[in-house]
Amino acid sequence: MDVDELLSLSAQQLSDTLDSLGIETGWAIADKIREDAFIAPDEPCLSSPRERRNAAFENLVVGTLAERVFRDQHLALLEPDGFNIEDYHESGENRDFGVQKGGLELPINVKVASTMFREARRVVDLDPEDCIPLGAYKAIGASERVREMVYVFLVDFHLRERVDAFMEGLDEDLAIGWDLLSWFGGNGMKRAQDRYISTLFDRHDSDLRELAPGATSFRVISAQRALAIMRRHPRRVPGLGVKAAGTGVIRGEVNIHVSVEEETRPWDDVADAVRRHGIQYVLDQVIRTVRAEIPDPEL
Image (cartoon, rainbow, N blue to C red; front, side, top):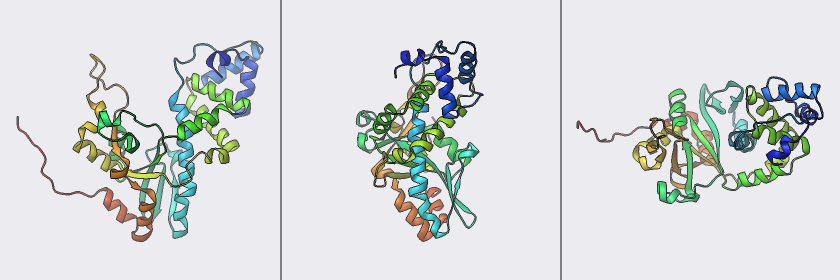
């Protein structure tokens, strides 16, 4: 539905939707809806939505789908070989998962590349089909906190379109909740978003998994390698030169653009190396160094 249809819904209808989705008290918007449903249940109660839909929330569906598929269809294959898979989602940190054995861990953050950078050839000298972005400051932060962090990307430039089409056909309460959380924020929003995503996957897990690519499309690059690419190829990070006028503040996300074919590796190859040679073998590749001459001008 469009935002005008959402704004026309009664307080009671919105309150019933929140109950159906399991969204409890604590989100400011939900609390107001329930208060208005008690006072004037048949009257609309929403006003002042965002100027545009919340893309970060809507990306949660794609991101959660990638994490579930990767955990169940790829990481699970390591468990029969004696590896433990640690899930860090409740910890609120950089790692999503850790592959563990013998006191060692390969730390993993799962990401999705589902939108093609169509100007990649002109801007960063990569073909659009071969270019994925990685947040520069996220890579810096990850490398400082967890030196051996690797990013596992689900690369599918049509996945977002398939997910968006699926979400447009949702049942009424999920459809209303989707639009409500897309158009409204406020205190306590994060917990409400997480509850919505949990309910969505509880009801439609198998349907959503069918949207993911059948063959493996997961590619691996470490935070350390992404930073090395940034140092060697500053043109790959065009956002470093973009500042808001007069503020000295970088505007928008600053991304390191990497080549899928040349600068990432298939997850299946990394998993095979973990099985055959152990976790330390892969960690050594992440922190590998070589001697090199670098410019060091004094003027």
